[in-house]
Image (tube, rainbow, N blue to C red; front, side, top):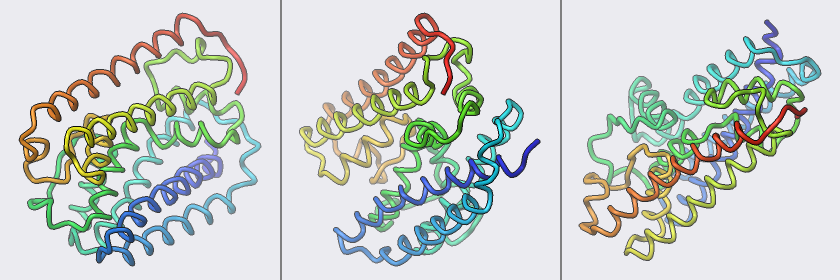
Length: 268
């Protein structure tokens, strides 16, 4: 076991999580919400923590990541990412209990959709956007995102991919795992944009459309309204939600099968 290498990759994942925090901060600034400072502080804490871990363990990047370390890395990445994801909830006062905040963040990342918040509509828009964004990130995976944009993991990327996406046989991946991760994120993001556009065409505001597109693609169910999609009393929006949830999972499964059938071993 190489703890330094595990922490190095976790540091990268936390860095990416901090960058995602900039989006709800921007939303809060646009809408003039009260959660600007809490979101900014959350970003700073997360960014500095991720940067520190990354810089302190960077020397371990030359080591090869083995299977056991890969599974430890993916598991603890989600546990620690959830820890930092509680910051916007706690610092904004939207959730006062750490246990409740951790539960809410974990429900987002695991896309289970469970929630301890009784009145969603009183939550500041920035924090609510972060809540939806955690579910969108969880729908694909922080590790897959890191693989897609940071080709620094060497041959260990294969082990990480297997740990994050166990449905795919490692010995039948595309020649470059980074290419596979990029392709998956490209499809996921593209469908999210399309879903947002359809929601807007159906009558949602751009804010509600983006939030619901995030959670639709993740099939998690978080919403900006207490009554969820039923709040809009629009059968077209309900039908759109169902279609995109089915389409993403069908596309995801089709792509996995295509990788298994047509790919061969290669280096990252």
